[in-house]
Amino acid sequence: MSHRTADPLAESATAQMPDGYAYVELDEAASVGHALLAEECALAIAYNGISHAVMMVSPSALEDFIVGFSLTSAVVGAAKDIYDIQVRRAGEAFSAEVQIASRAFWTLKQQRRSLAGTSGCGLCGVEALEQALPQLDTLSVNPLPPAAHLADLRTRIGEMQKLARQSGALHAALFVDELGEIVLCREDIGRHNALDKLIGALSRESRDARSGFAVVTSRCSLELIHKAVRAGFASLVSLSAPTDLCVRWARRHRLNLIHLPHHSVPRIYSPAPARG
Image (tube, rainbow, N blue to C red; front, side, top):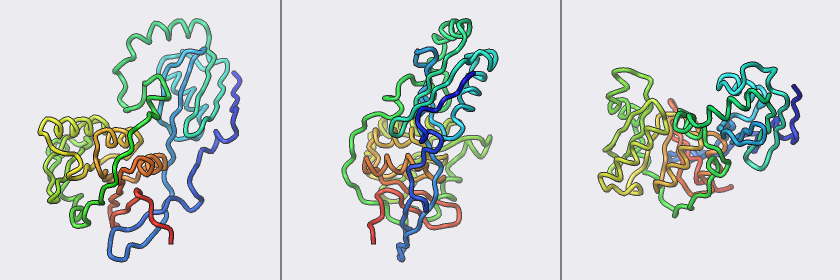
């Protein structure tokens, strides 16, 4: 099996500055800091020229990932069935052309009919980079939530997560209205599912997504940015730090993006801090 990375940048896809992404602390001092964020990219995988999946991954050890994915997804029965891997980079995305044994490819084609709808990772399983990195409308500029509406938010979220208190292992997506009150909470084992539920609840109750802001308790990855922009939220608050790609897309599409750390004041990543 031969492995070739066509673009040397594929081994290090970092697009952020050495000192990380700038943010401004949401308090009276409005101090500006920098933080290094986890990297995220779209990786399109094709077997013997047939597009199979697009995964959102960290851009390191991509060939290791491709081999492991091929094995654990039963695309191949053994690593020896993988003859060649070529990884190329195009902007924020990577593509991998994988050559596999004829018998493995025949089995894969038989399996493809059952793959739709089985993914649990949001973007995992879509078959085109256009779906992983879609064209989105740019939002209108909206004010940030008042700092007071973020006060004790972690505690208040915990009180709203009724299912999680019973079983654990559940993400939540919540909506905070214009008065700073949590009016909706939806929970799910999948972070993207929880946000979809929240968006559906807002629609069914005829609530304006711009009148408040959404909160997600999970890692803030790109598919959540997609959903928030498509739903028309003015602001998205995440309890976990966003990835670098999330910050770039939030800024590009004018989605206010705020990280609420455990023991620090909120950090505004989008809009970008004004340069001093």
